[in-house]
Structure formats: structure tokens, C-alpha cells
Length: 192
Length: 172
Image 1 (cartoon, each protein chain N blue to C red):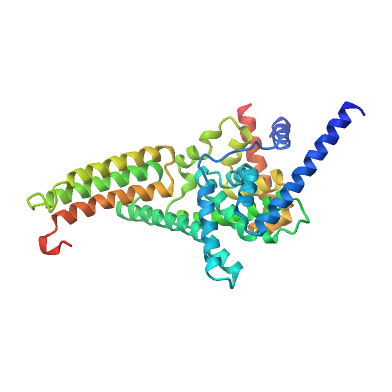
Image 2 (cartoon, rainbow over the protein chains, first blue to last red; image 1 turned 180 degrees about the vertical axis):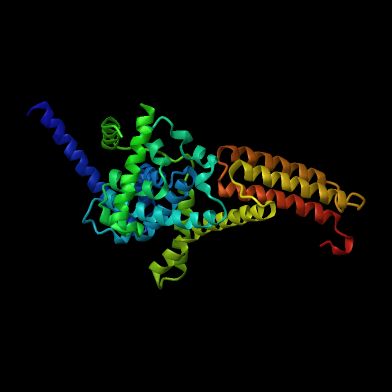
């Protein structure tokens, strides 16, 4: 057998093992096994936090939202029917919970102050991530344009799905995406 | 807009985003919420799903309450000072207002005997706590939990001054 093929078979086998292990962990978590749930948490923490941070554009809020996602996941894990990849389903849970969480939190803040205009907010937002160019630009986007860009360009959602999630018209989702792209291209162009 | 910048954006998106890890330890809070849910479930086996849901919401409710608290604080400052403040400006305004109120109170009670001897020491300890919180706020000026802690420390200082100088008949 050629070496490459052996390597591929090994990788496929390893991937299948991981799949089986994950299925077992999900089944155990559904039976309220906290240890199994912790293993899923360890496996998906960075993925969930990364998406939360891109949607929130605020470190502290993203950390709180990540906790909220996993608490909701514990509650809703029974709803995972195994018809899709767990990671795909978790992406969807994360997006929905995070956007809902931001709306709840921001509702209070924005009645009192316009937090998005705060320079301190910008420092917190991407001060630690200057080395990651796309991340940095994403955090500069206006909220709705950022949500649409993250969900469509990075998460692969269709505009119809985004419109439903964000409670906006499909045309608005497309317009916000266009706006986000224009802003991002402008910033890239300025730095060239 | 140059096609060059469009190409670069497409490349960046295609390359994907990097993995990011939170700085704060998050599991403890999640585990507490989960355990609360389980405890409630064990104490009453009926309506399991409903119980888990309600208990699981408890932890974020604290976060929301903290945010509400800070929002009200910000609102009060905005109302009292006539301008909207945030971040470093909010912390500076809170500290300045607290110092003014504290000084006024100390002047008011200057000639009144104190009920305890170590109240100044208590104030100093709280000053140290406030300094530590303000240092943490330099990193995260809009952290609601830290802002709430700072306000609590200031309120404790005011409460101590008032309590130790209250007339004897009014002391617990």
C-alpha cells in the first residue's frame, strides 16, 4: 500500500474514532453527565468563543455570552437530533444565543450611553488582537453589518436564514453585507 | 474601490478566522448554573425540562442584574452632571463624586464622637480595594462587574462613616 494511502486511512480511522467518541459524549450529556458535557465544552470552547467575540466585538461581553451559550446548550442538547454535524448545530445555537444575549445587554446600556461611540470600548474590543487583521477589521464594523458579515461570509448562512435570525428583511441583510464589504475593502485599501 | 482590496478581502475570508481563547476561566460559572439546575431537578422530579431551563437562566440573570445596576449608575451620573459619561470618564466621575461626598460627610461629622476606633482603618482598607478595582478597570473600563464592585466599595465607605457617627440611640 502506498505510504500516502496508509496515512489517509489512518486519518480517516482517527476521524471516525473521534466521531464515535463525540457521539458518546453527546449521548452522555443528554443523560445529564456533567463530565461528558465538560469534555464537549473543552473541545468547542474556542470555536464558540471565537464566534461570540466576532459577533459581540467586546471581550468581556463575549466571555459572558460564551457562558450563556454553554448553559443554554446544557438545556437544549436534547434537541440535537444527529441529522447534522454537532459543530454545525452548535454554530447555529451560538449565533442565536449570542445575538439574543447582546440585544438584552445592549438594550440597557444604549438607553443610557452610546457605548459604541466610546473610545475605551474600541480599545477593549480589539486591543488584544491587533495582529489578526481580518478580526481587527470585523470589530470595527457597525453592529448589524458585522453580524451579517460574520454569519454570511464566515459562517456560511444564507441571507434568508440571517434575515430570520436577525428579524430583518432579506434585502436588508444583503444591503448590510454590501455595506460591510465596502467598509472592509475601504479599510484594506487605506492600509495598502 | 480597487479590485486589489476586494481580492485581499476574499483571500482573508477564504483563509478563515483564527481560533481564539477566552482570557477568563468560564467553566466554573457554567458548572454552577448546571449544578443548580440539577439540584432543582432532584428536589422535584416533575416538570424536569422546565426546572432545568429556569435554573439555567439564573446565572445570566445575575449578569443582567449587574448590567442594569451599572446602567442605572451611569444614568444617575448623566442626570446629576448633565452629560453622558463612559469608560475612563465614568470611573473618574464616580471617584470624584465619591471623594466630594465623603469629604462633605467627614466635615459634617467632624465634631461628633465615633462609635468605634478602627473606622479610619476600615476606610483605608476599602480605599485599597477601590484602588485595586480601578487598576483592573484600566484594562476593562466598561466591565459591568468591576464598575459594580467599585460602586459597592464607595457605598460601604459612606455607610461606615454614617454608621460610626450616628447618635448612640440610633446604633444597632
